[in-house]
Image (cartoon, rainbow, N blue to C red):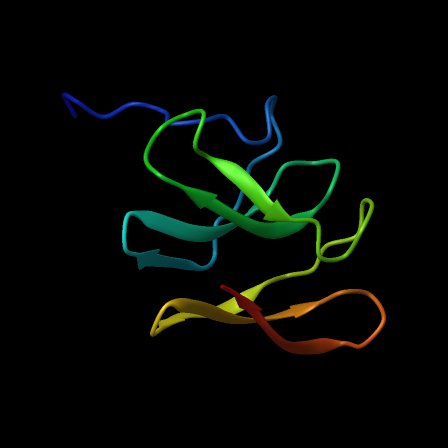
Length: 94
């Protein structure tokens, strides 16, 4: 479609990046993606290539946090994730 382009190649190469959670929050959008080295983690974008970044490596290293159930509530993003120690728990981005 005209005007459609790749915003950022989060996981370059043949490995697919599977996005399974997405929420719009003001001028940002939060989503889950796998960049390869850090696994499935929380990302955000302001709609620009430079502004598309991993928010945090919640489960440090190559393990995935598998953030899910993203909800914008007031001025906070609430979601569940696993940091590798506590199991799937409630997290917040303020």
